[in-house]
Amino acid sequence: MISSLSHAQTQLVDEVTSFLREQLPEDLSARVKRGVHIGRHELTRWVGVLDRQGWAVPHWPKEHGGTGWSLVERQLFENAMREAHAPTLPGFGVNMVGPAIIRFGTPEQKANYLPRIKRGELWWCQGYSEPEAGSDLASLRTRAERHGDHYRVNGRKIWTSGAEDADWIFCLVRTDPVVQPQKGISFLLVDLKSPGIDVTPLVAFNGKRLWNQVFFRDVEVPVEQRLGAENEGWSVAKTLLGDERLLVSRVAENRRIHTLVNEALADVRVTQGKETDLQAMHGKRDQLRIRLSALETTSLRLLMLADEGIRIGAEPSMLKLRGSQLVQAQDELLSELAGHWLVPLDSGDQNDPVGPAWTEYTASGTFHHRGFTIAGGATEVQKNIIAKEVLGL
Ligand SMILES: Cc1cc2nc3c(=O)[nH]c(=O)nc-3n(C[C@H](O)[C@H](O)[C@H](O)COP(=O)(O)OP(=O)(O)OC[C@H]3O[C@@H](n4cnc5c(N)ncnc54)[C@H](O)[C@@H]3O)c2cc1C
Image 1: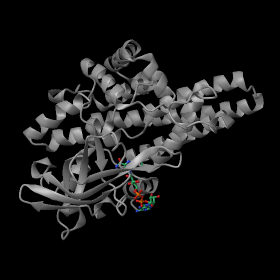
Image 2 (image 1 turned 45 degrees about the vertical axis):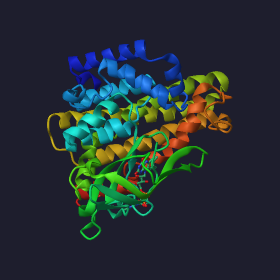
Image 3 (image 1 turned 30 degrees about the vertical axis):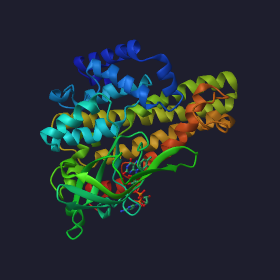
Image 4 (image 1 turned 90 degrees about the vertical axis):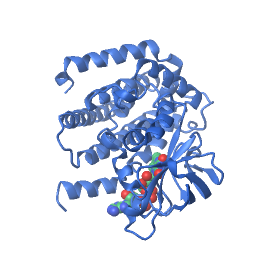
C-alpha cells in the first residue's frame, strides 16, 4: 500500500522524519518509549516546537492554523510521530473540542479558545460518561437548569481521563428532562475552577490514577459557554469527532509497539537465549506483523476513499475493533518476553527498570491498553454497529 502513495505523500513522510530527527529531544522520546508519564510542562514545550513548524493542529482548517492535509497525509504524519516515540498530544482539546468549536462556535468562542488550544495553553477533558450512562449515553442525567444568563449544573461525570491536568471540561448535560432523551441535551464548556466543582481520582488496578469523577454542585455556567443551540448538544457530540472517527485504527500506535516487539526479541536472545521458546515467539511476532500490515492497508484504503468523498459505513467500527485487539495482542507477546521482569515494574515513574528498558513500557502499556477495547465505544457496541450496517440484523 505504501507503494501507492503519491510523490507528495512520500515527500511528506521524509519531511516529517527528518524534522523529528532534528527537533525531537532524545531524552523525551526515550521516556515516551519507556512509557514514562510526560508532564504538562514538557508537553507544552513540545507543542511549541510543533506550532513553530505549523504542525500543532494539522487537521484544523488553514484559517485556524491547520495544514489542509488529506486524511491519508494525517495518518502518515501520525505514523511517523509515533514511530519516533514523539509524545502524544493532549487530544481532548486538539482533536475533539477544538474542531467542535470551529464548527459550532460563535466568533467570540473561536477567538477565545482556539488560539490557546493550538498553543497548548488550554487543556481540556471530556465529561460525557456517568455512572448510569456509558454505552447508552443518551440516558445521561447531569442537569443544567437555566436561570437568566447562566445555567445551574448539578450531577456527576465518571471515567473522566486527564481531569487532574485539565483547565476546562466539555460536558453533555440535560437541559430538558421531558422530551425524547437525545433531544433534551446541551453541550457546555465549563471552567474546572468554577465554584462547586470537585475532581476526585479513580485509581486503576495497577495503582495509577487513570480517571476521575467530576462532581457538580450548583455550578454556575454562563449561557455564552454553551456550544451550539440549547437542546442540540447531541448533534454537536455526534459530529464532534467528524473525520476523527476514521482515524480509530491505532495503526500508528501499533507500529510503535511493533518496534518494541522487535527490540525485545533481539534483546531476549542476548539476555535469556532460550532458542526453542524464541522460535515460537518469532512465529507469533510474524503473525502480528501480518495483522498490522492488513490493518494498515485496510485503514489507508478507507482513508483514500474518504478523501475522494465516498461515504464510509461500518468500516471504522471494524478498524476500531481490530486495532484495539492488535495493541493488546502485541502487549501480550511483550509480556511473555518480559517474563519475571514484569513483576516489580509499573510502580511509579521514578524507579529505574530492573530489566531492559523495554520491559518498563511493557508493564505500564499492558495495563493501560486493556481499556482500549472499551474507551470510545465498547467492543460489543462496535459489533452491534457492524451487525446492523453490514449484515442488516
Ligand atoms: C481508558 C478509558 C478512558 C475513558 N475516558 C473517558 C473520558 O475521558 N470521558 C468520558 O466521558 N468517558 C470516558 N471513558 C468511559 C467510556 O466512554 C465508557 O466506559 C464506555 O462508554 C462504556 O460505558 P460503561 O463503562 O458505562 O459500560 P456499559 O455501557 O455499562 O457496558 C458494560 C458492558 O455491556 C456491554 N454493552 C453495553 N451496551 C450493550 C449493547 N447494547 N449490546 C451488547 N453489549 C452491550 C458493553 O460492551 C460492556 O461490555 C473511558 C473509558 C476507558 C476504558
